[in-house]
Amino acid sequence: MKVAFVCAHNSCRSQMAEAISKIAAVDSFEAYSAGTETKPQINQDAVAVIKDIYGVDMNATQKSKLISDIPPVDVVITMGCNVNCPFLPCKYREDWGLEDPTGKGISEFIKTAKLIEEKVLELKNRIESLNIS
Image (tube, rainbow, N blue to C red; front, side, top):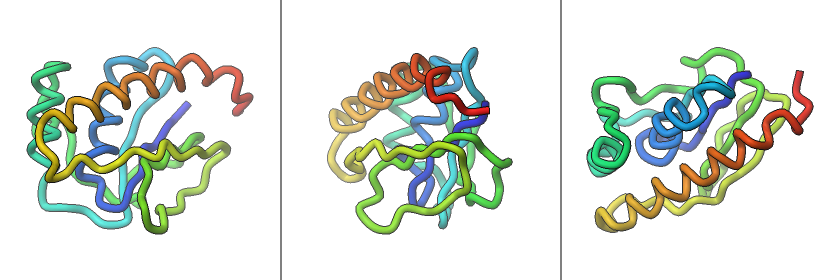
């Protein structure tokens, strides 16, 4: 099963979700992140928080990707784009409605990371009941 975390720029929330999923749900699904546009680098506050909490250096393990750069996926999770979320063909889709922590301080990034972890674990527990094959 392949899951894509998608938002417009693929630089913060979707990148955090990819990194967290590769730790918390590695036994349930393959995680990818992507956007309709890319940034030159991943949000460095997100990088710092993920490295501090989860020990993953996203600068070394991930890069900003377009939706055309990832393989076909079964599940698309949009992060709460507040504009038109990018479209990616899939068998199941949901929106997590997460606020972008960019520019709001490290405590907001930590809160966002913990919320993403909670949602990734919920998704992991529900993946079988989604009846996607």
